[in-house]
Image (cartoon, rainbow, N blue to C red; front, side, top):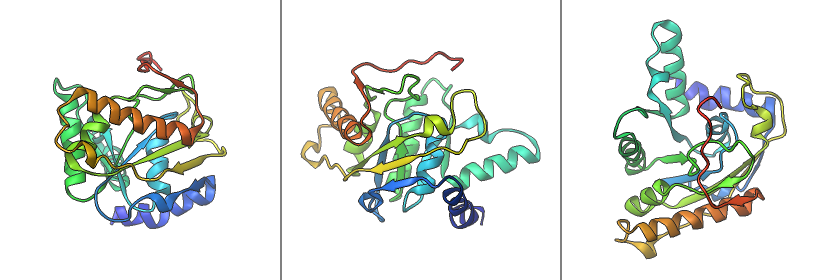
Length: 222
């Protein structure tokens, strides 16, 4: 029920209020498993994409957000679930494996899964080297990857601000990338890196950011 309210009421209201520009939404397959791989400029990115995408999109969320006690905690957990967030314990020793397993479950069920290959939001506005988890998912599931570029979300919710501001936001969906030519080679680190780099280059072409070939590590306090 809450899922329908979010999709049919809150999402249209958010689009009316913030008026995001959406380009290339027709590139997102409406059926079957698909990975939406996006750049990451703001904490609000993983909420913007499900609001503007033409189908429900699941993102991973910190399990702590789903474990807050009391009525407020239940409401927050229900709202996040309605938005499509999947709880994952990122402090667990096997957090990366748990994240991949949760993503794989979404894709195996024919859903759309959103991921930020950079791993953390960019504090300098540049596009950083992608982690190869996105390639692992694409290669093991056979799901196409739609590159996504967000611009303006860093102004919509700057670091340290809890409430999104009115700002010009653009979301560009690129054409799906398919990697069937690498079938059976998902265990190769070189192949995973090549696939990840191709995905990041496609995001770069859509975003017009400056690319830096190293992982982005942000301070814990950021």
